[in-house]
Amino acid sequence: MLIAFFAFVGVVGILILGLSLYGKYQLSKVPALSFEKALEYTTKNNDDAVITVGIIRDGHISYTVYGENGKELPQKLHTYEIGSLTKTFTAALINMAISEGKIDIDSTIDTYLPLSDRNEYPTIRELLTHTSGYKGYYFEYPMISNFFGGRNDFFGITKEMVLNKLSDLSMDKESYGFTYSNFGYAVLGLLLEAVYDADYTTLVNEFAVSKLGLTSTKISDKSGNLGNYWDWKDNDAYLSAGAITSNISDMLFYTQMQLEENSYFAECHNSLETINATTEDYKAMDIRMDEIGMSWIIDSENGIIWHNGGTGNYNSYLGFNPETGTAVVILSNLSPNYRIPATVLGAKLLMELEN
Image (cartoon, rainbow, N blue to C red; front, side, top):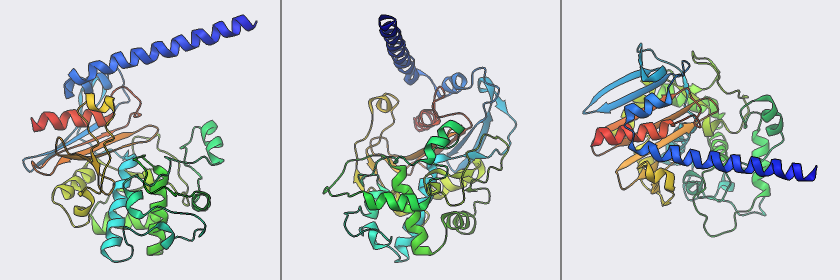
């Protein structure tokens, strides 16, 4: 019986290794694919696929909707979860608070949040640049039921849970390296609530509509025509890390504001930290993470500023070259783990347009 068990474990191990090697082999083909071929492969024989591709080039704005096998669909506005592109809105709100004198980027977060005085805390700059030392997230008990219920991992993680976790952690090193942190952006959401005395949903929804004119961009209420949207509670702490939904019209207008160096965003694009976080897989796709501003990733080699996003059933990419005025937005209703993600598709198209 024991021998049979170890034989089974060995077979599973070989299978996992085989799948890993096959995955790397498949990945090795991707750099050679054109955007068109990569899109066709990603949507191959998937009649649920709805990928909207927006382009800004030479001052002209356009978008195309693609479905199964890369075929063009009617030009319709679809509502997508934009995932971590939400962080660029959170960063813009932080930038607004800095410009209004409500916060100092180099102050530690305990200046604004009710935290224990026995710990060391990161600065707002460190949270913005994912160099705070905080992990991507910390386990909380709701994650167990979320897993078994097929829900968003962060559903039901309250603000009180995040504040309690903050008081348990001490960031006592002089500096930390780059670690992408949803938790850090949840903390920035709490900080915004503290200095503006309003909940994050109200802040970002009003900012999107009143300040930016984005009438279809908001914290998800699960309304939209594509379905499979994440569940959120009103009091969830991680809304500021990835809960916004939008459509291609709003996101292209949002991108145009980035290119125009709108006052809400200009400072966000400036490098705050050199991170040198480009992975070998990203490097193979000509995607670079050299520096970071207020949430925005800076590819200094190619002159591109970008961010991406992913939820359980959606993934997205927004990248632009401020020198040439060229930009690409990809909104997809497919999982970020499904075939070729929006980040790779978007980077491919942007480089093709640039070249």
